[in-house]
Image 1 (cartoon, helix red, strand yellow):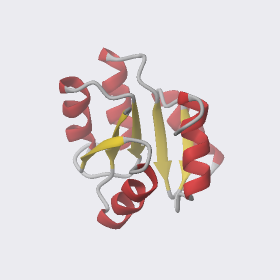
Image 2 (spheres, rainbow, N blue to C red):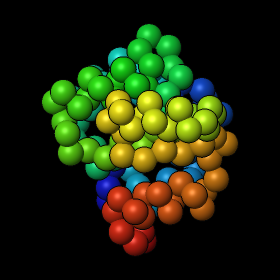
Image 3 (cartoon, rainbow, N blue to C red):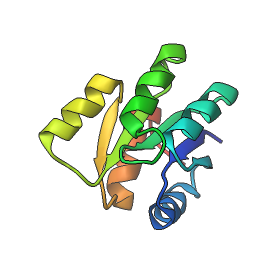
Image 4 (cartoon, rainbow, N blue to C red):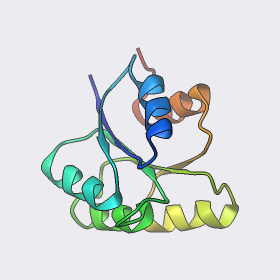
Length: 120
């Protein structure tokens, strides 16, 4: 089973993401960008769902830091700010895709299918 890192500081958003993912993936949580970078260094994840607005280190900084040692892992930005400028900033930081919050199950799983192919 593929393993996903969910970098999300908000408990209710994390619970939603874990509910969406639980049927198809193993997952682990990072509560801030710094923790996401540390976990990405220490573990092998098949993808990372990266909240952009987090304490200590935001998701854009964390993505840039992860890209310094791992250019392969797919990183999907998660943000409530769904403006084109936010999407552009996420892509420039090294994200592979972008999901606007609130994340729907269908859209999230369709995005992950683009990365992994058919789920289940």
